[in-house]
Image (tube, rainbow, N blue to C red; front, side, top):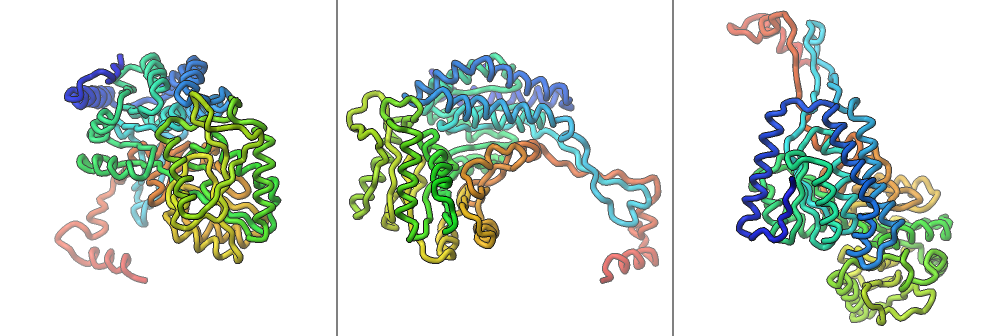
Length: 486
């Protein structure tokens, strides 16, 4: 059975996790080839436990956030975990097949054959975040288990109730030698990141990722880093502003903007600014006529992040900027008790050195910058660290191509935000400071597999026929000339 690390003395944590890692690796090696049936069984158990515990997950996340709607959790954590597992279950037989590759002339004519065979890596570590803790734990398991690996998980300490429910789920669904989970605080995470996994997946902040990568490097552990950054939204002059505003604000208010892919700032034609602001206000009021006692509007996760976001607003004011809360019912957010809600807040043309333009927001604050010429938008985005996503609203094909071809981002959406992450066969990942590596669907299977190159030689003495067998002679020279000619 999985044993939680809560209460385990700090000196024993690393030893405890190391013993589980060794047991998983030994069991993996002893088992040999991981059959499709075994992989499907592990995936099926994951699906079953997600469905069984869905109500507990809803309650736990509502507890951790102090206000998080059942519908939000069902869509973004439960369903968003079940779907990738079902997708992997359906396709794992196909993904496991030996992949044929061309063999060079004349070896192909002589019967030589080249293939790629996908092998499990072994034991994969998963460090998951607090914003969608179930999805960003169980979602990656789809590719990891489909690839035939064992797994060790460290969930976030910022969502302790959810972490405890996930520990119950893991205990029930898998043997500790298949999947193990370790709850606890930073000391657990620090010890976990230093283990000699065969691969490590980290989802979280770029600053923390630097420490994770450094710890992994000590054991030459390859990493997949799913980070964030400031994902821009570019509004064209021919955009239907009402449609764009609704889609933007769905992405910005879902989970109170605590999403790595949330729109981080808008770039709007200067003559469209007033209309854009009006549209953002009207669609938000339609979705949330009130906010404080509305269970559908999520609270900021904890006091620390509540103070961080308010600190951004204080910094803005100190630099001469202004913020406009969207507060349809004129509620007093200073009077709330038990929650950390912040209204959706528009920040028009903030100073360039303000924190809302320098830091990833990860909350319901939305800066808006204006532009005169479209090329300004491309230059502005490219002057900043590469984002996890870039979003374009408009019908101008040359502008669309400029966004797709000239901006380097992890992913992109045209006339929407965030929706690309729902497409199971599109790889999800960042680039540069927004991450490295990708998963989801077939790409996830490949990411967590070793692509082994295999060459099968023919029955002929190829070395002699090709002049590679000493003593060298005419056949050698003929082979060289054939290969180096233009």
